[in-house]
Length: 312
Image (tube, rainbow, N blue to C red; front, side, top):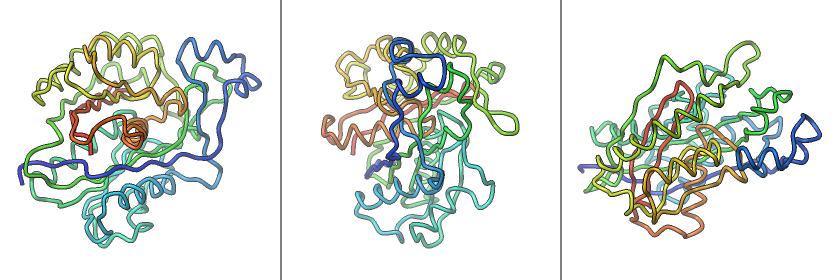
């Protein structure tokens, strides 16, 4: 086998919906203020007994069922998250135990909002190298656990949820080469620090970086995959903010692509946002199997990672 491919997807979101009007009763904001600045209408909020691991397991179980594989087929589990409370056992190990996997390698990956695309690239590399046959890759966050609900600039953004993908070997690569990197000297622009940990960011700095520096990198991702931006069927960027997603997609030149905008109903779910939006897009039937889709994560550490995949 000379490559890997996405075999199936699955996602999970908590039942609780938090509207902009409800937020306006908590902090000095309004539905109009939130929509005009970030494009978000609603977000999902996890219940107290819903953990990062439990949400990850729900999404992973759906992806595994959709793949037609059995728990015994999975030999690598990668979970992208920055909001797991416990250090050991890690979230990947807890997902493996919940799903009854036999003896997989289990690793958590913390690259914040770019975590899923980093983890997907790692799974692709492992399968190409022969170190794994089938991988389960999950992006999951309980971002509301690290939210300052008195800060209207950040609390209006966040949501909880999980998305998962099952990856397997392929005769021809259906997951393109990753382009990844970071801007370490600007890592302070997105932070989850302190005790208790709280999310904070320098919004204008992140906006300028994302809308000016990321489009050329996204074009490089397409070049590495041998796909022209105008030939993309869909673009799934990290669902940070509609006012970032729209200009980045426009500057990329993906004129014929469906641009995922799940942020409007799910909020910013960090590492979960790309697999969550992708799973919904595929479930809707709006993208044909085998069509090229750009995945591009960016955010904390001012990290980024992207690849073009073929839609499962």
